[in-house]
Image (cartoon, rainbow over all chains, first blue to last red):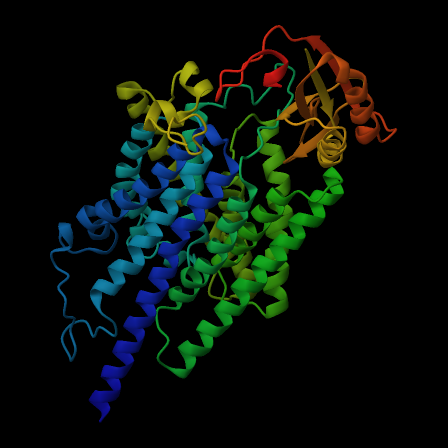
Length: 412
Length: 112
């Protein structure tokens, strides 16, 4: 009888893990729609292609070598078989090992897709994919091994021992993605015409705000899997309660972020900027991701609102620094990712401010430097940026040879 | 024969079309254009960056008509398209050298 209950718990936890992983996979659609909506129509096909292919690259590279760097085991996932240990043995698995890979791999893809929006409209597709190979196969797994993997950082110190805690990845996934994005943006440069000679910031409006909004809602839904699945179990009263709290807080943080950003945008610009409200929802989600389990409902809402306020200021500040980020990825995931990490000790004694700071610096330092080097090598080998003429005509034609909204095709 | 070209506010298109059919005009061509005369543009905001939109959406109507119909056509369009506010548009009349009906090959006023 006890064995039957164990089987049920194993099955339920595995099922839960897989469903949450599937929800996080759905975030890839969210990123694709959000980014497609915020770029110009002439660059839409290229960014969609980037989003689809980076996801595929992430899945494959993490399978080939990334997972083994992060968690041990042989390359090509050859140590994970279909069956897990059921009784006794060194590791009492409570869910299927392949489910662990599946859940982890979609997080890698999420981190990678943060980069695609920031370098949109001017980076070569294959230069980006070359970077994706390195990021998902090596850069992310390395910092992942120091955090969720529990390994010491180059043998020097162990983040978990220093009080570093990142529940679902504000730092490990989001800030890491933003660090890579920042490296890419710095090396690829701003879009032509974005910044004027006297410090003017020129607007380059997105072509499809309905898609951007759809993308945001899809991300919001997927985030329930992102944070909810990070509880890692559901088949007990305690873990089920934790899952429920996480879902509730995740949702409230998004709501808080949306309103926070909307109000601040109205105050600063006099109008309700939809794109800021959308970024606000995401900022709220990122802000709660490091610690969705310990805050109260009100605290979660406030944390989200802080993320929403911060993201608006960050977006305008980055533009003043001539860091061109068409979708606000560096602000939403990087700046607010850091905020998310720093908010954890407020409600969780298991984390310390110093631990969070050291962890943040470690993650950011590693990913930023490694990304700069990788992007630089790619720049030397094949070039990062499309030519000026190609940028003018649109990346869709130069990289993909097709238009997103063809108006002059002869078959009508 | 004359070509009457009118640039009007988009929401006035239905009124103008009805007015033209009342006076017996049988065919028109419509295109969506943008432009400005003395009506100024406006500023929009995108993520904290202001930009000026000079052009406003307008609708251009082109009608090929017989010389005798020009005055009625101008009057019909003017009355239907007018709002009294800035940006109502303009009507241009130019000479039309030649007209052919593609289906039958008719030319001249019979093709109008």
